[in-house]
Length: 141
Image 1: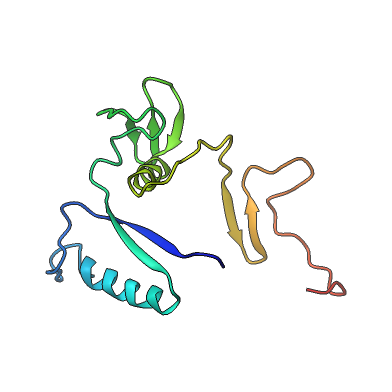
Image 2: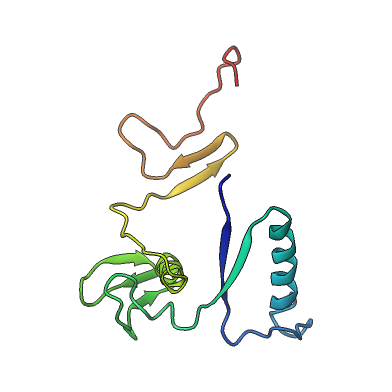
Protein backbone atom coordinates (compact mmCIF):
# COMPACT_ATOMS: atom_id res chain seq x y z
CA UNK A 1 0.00 0.00 0.00
CA UNK A 2 3.04 2.31 -0.03
CA UNK A 3 3.48 2.67 3.75
CA UNK A 4 7.13 2.68 4.78
CA UNK A 5 6.95 4.34 8.23
CA UNK A 6 4.54 4.18 11.18
CA UNK A 7 4.59 6.67 14.04
CA UNK A 8 3.02 5.88 17.39
CA UNK A 9 2.62 8.11 20.42
CA UNK A 10 4.48 7.12 23.58
CA UNK A 11 1.94 7.45 26.43
CA UNK A 12 3.48 9.63 29.11
CA UNK A 13 3.19 8.32 32.70
CA UNK A 14 1.77 4.95 31.63
CA UNK A 15 3.44 1.88 33.06
CA UNK A 16 5.82 0.50 30.46
CA UNK A 17 6.74 -2.91 31.88
CA UNK A 18 4.61 -3.90 34.87
CA UNK A 19 0.94 -4.11 33.97
CA UNK A 20 -1.31 -6.31 36.12
CA UNK A 21 -4.98 -6.95 36.88
CA UNK A 22 -5.06 -4.03 39.36
CA UNK A 23 -4.21 -1.25 36.95
CA UNK A 24 -5.59 -0.26 33.58
CA UNK A 25 -2.37 -1.05 31.76
CA UNK A 26 -2.67 -4.85 31.61
CA UNK A 27 -1.04 -4.87 28.18
CA UNK A 28 2.47 -3.58 28.69
CA UNK A 29 3.34 -0.78 26.30
CA UNK A 30 6.84 -2.08 25.57
CA UNK A 31 5.56 -5.59 24.87
CA UNK A 32 2.98 -4.34 22.37
CA UNK A 33 5.42 -1.95 20.70
CA UNK A 34 8.03 -4.70 20.29
CA UNK A 35 5.38 -7.00 18.83
CA UNK A 36 4.15 -4.27 16.48
CA UNK A 37 7.72 -3.46 15.47
CA UNK A 38 8.39 -7.14 14.65
CA UNK A 39 5.24 -7.41 12.52
CA UNK A 40 5.97 -4.15 10.67
CA UNK A 41 9.59 -5.20 10.10
CA UNK A 42 8.37 -8.30 8.25
CA UNK A 43 6.76 -5.93 5.74
CA UNK A 44 9.74 -3.58 5.56
CA UNK A 45 8.00 -0.83 7.55
CA UNK A 46 9.90 1.21 10.13
CA UNK A 47 8.29 2.00 13.50
CA UNK A 48 8.98 5.29 15.29
CA UNK A 49 7.84 6.01 18.86
CA UNK A 50 7.15 9.70 19.57
CA UNK A 51 6.72 11.13 23.08
CA UNK A 52 3.18 12.46 23.19
CA UNK A 53 3.55 14.51 26.38
CA UNK A 54 1.78 17.86 25.99
CA UNK A 55 0.27 17.14 22.57
CA UNK A 56 -3.25 17.62 23.94
CA UNK A 57 -2.44 21.08 25.35
CA UNK A 58 -0.44 22.33 22.37
CA UNK A 59 -2.45 23.92 19.59
CA UNK A 60 -1.64 22.34 16.22
CA UNK A 61 -2.95 25.47 14.50
CA UNK A 62 -0.99 28.31 16.16
CA UNK A 63 1.63 26.09 17.94
CA UNK A 64 1.04 27.75 21.33
CA UNK A 65 0.25 25.88 24.55
CA UNK A 66 -3.26 26.67 25.75
CA UNK A 67 -4.07 25.24 29.19
CA UNK A 68 -7.82 25.57 28.53
CA UNK A 69 -7.78 24.68 24.83
CA UNK A 70 -9.29 21.27 25.38
CA UNK A 71 -12.86 22.23 26.21
CA UNK A 72 -14.22 18.76 26.75
CA UNK A 73 -13.42 15.24 25.70
CA UNK A 74 -13.09 15.32 21.94
CA UNK A 75 -13.07 19.09 21.40
CA UNK A 76 -10.14 21.51 21.20
CA UNK A 77 -10.73 25.22 20.53
CA UNK A 78 -7.80 27.52 19.81
CA UNK A 79 -8.42 30.68 21.88
CA UNK A 80 -6.25 32.72 19.48
CA UNK A 81 -7.83 31.74 16.14
CA UNK A 82 -11.17 30.40 17.41
CA UNK A 83 -10.82 27.30 15.20
CA UNK A 84 -12.49 24.17 16.56
CA UNK A 85 -10.82 20.81 15.97
CA UNK A 86 -11.24 17.28 17.27
CA UNK A 87 -8.93 16.93 20.30
CA UNK A 88 -7.49 13.60 19.13
CA UNK A 89 -6.83 15.02 15.67
CA UNK A 90 -5.12 18.02 17.29
CA UNK A 91 -2.84 15.69 19.29
CA UNK A 92 -2.15 13.50 16.22
CA UNK A 93 -1.16 16.57 14.21
CA UNK A 94 1.25 17.56 17.01
CA UNK A 95 2.76 14.06 17.05
CA UNK A 96 3.23 14.28 13.27
CA UNK A 97 4.97 17.65 13.68
CA UNK A 98 7.32 16.14 16.27
CA UNK A 99 8.13 13.43 13.75
CA UNK A 100 9.12 16.12 11.24
CA UNK A 101 6.05 16.27 9.04
CA UNK A 102 4.35 19.44 7.89
CA UNK A 103 0.65 19.29 8.71
CA UNK A 104 -1.92 21.18 6.71
CA UNK A 105 -5.26 22.21 8.12
CA UNK A 106 -8.02 20.38 6.25
CA UNK A 107 -10.79 22.55 4.85
CA UNK A 108 -13.50 20.29 6.20
CA UNK A 109 -13.36 17.14 8.28
CA UNK A 110 -16.10 14.70 7.41
CA UNK A 111 -17.55 12.15 9.79
CA UNK A 112 -18.32 8.63 8.65
CA UNK A 113 -20.29 5.64 9.90
CA UNK A 114 -19.49 2.02 9.18
CA UNK A 115 -22.38 -0.04 7.85
CA UNK A 116 -22.62 -3.61 6.62
CA UNK A 117 -22.16 -2.32 3.06
CA UNK A 118 -19.18 -0.06 3.67
CA UNK A 119 -18.39 3.38 5.00
CA UNK A 120 -21.03 6.09 4.60
CA UNK A 121 -20.74 9.84 5.29
CA UNK A 122 -22.68 11.14 8.30
CA UNK A 123 -22.92 14.51 6.64
CA UNK A 124 -24.19 13.44 3.24
CA UNK A 125 -23.31 15.29 0.09
CA UNK A 126 -26.15 16.40 -2.15
CA UNK A 127 -27.94 13.38 -3.55
CA UNK A 128 -26.30 10.91 -1.18
CA UNK A 129 -27.81 9.23 1.85
CA UNK A 130 -26.47 7.73 5.06
CA UNK A 131 -28.88 4.81 4.78
CA UNK A 132 -27.50 1.46 3.73
CA UNK A 133 -27.85 1.27 -0.06
CA UNK A 134 -29.74 -1.52 -1.77
CA UNK A 135 -27.51 -3.92 -3.65
CA UNK A 136 -28.47 -4.83 -7.20
CA UNK A 137 -28.01 -8.64 -7.38
CA UNK A 138 -27.19 -8.47 -11.10
CA UNK A 139 -24.38 -5.93 -10.78
CA UNK A 140 -20.81 -7.29 -10.59
CA UNK A 141 -18.89 -6.69 -7.39
